Length: 243
Image 1 (cartoon, rainbow, N blue to C red):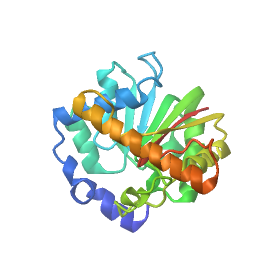
Image 2 (cartoon, helix red, strand yellow):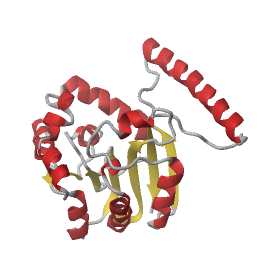
Image 3 (cartoon, rainbow, N blue to C red):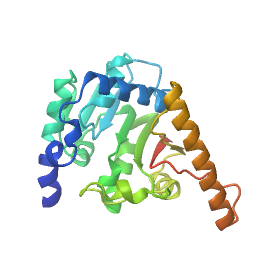
Image 4 (cartoon, rainbow, N blue to C red):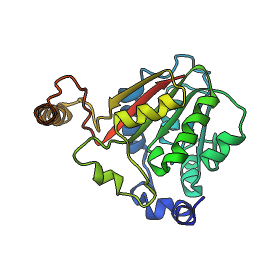
């Protein structure tokens, strides 16, 4: 691992994610609602499915899986402080290890592998390697779910340069190209909405966003002359990819 990365990851909570030092139960529940709305339809119904969360951070996604009844879950993160936080919220199936090292040395197979806000921390060559290792670690018809910075949005720089360890951001086309290169058979890219309509306030926000999104879509159609492209304008995008 590069020296500058190690310096930051060793103290990631203090210098990178200070707002998550003392994550509350309310925050975990809010994040669980987001996971449920955004990707809840994709994981297998079998609660014994083996699920690996790469770059698990403070364990928020594993917390969601545990609430949903999944028993066979594992999280990997290179930051010792993040692993400590995960254990504090009751997630015991976590390991402090570099995700590439783990995948290189593990023969275990998984039904689902996830990577939320992770792949932007890799260089191009590292991500190509990661995608091939993830493919190898998946069982037949296995699923790879990821969330990353969307380079197609007008404000991509806000997240791209928000962290010193961010190396790259993707568009739906570039990430699809990389995953198809790793032999994934079906690659689907989706907008990662920051919130979903649940009450009056969130419904108003969501409606305003859809109006803004429509305006951006018209702009792109006028500039490019392409009226059929499925543009994604959310600051993050989701990838749902099948082996």
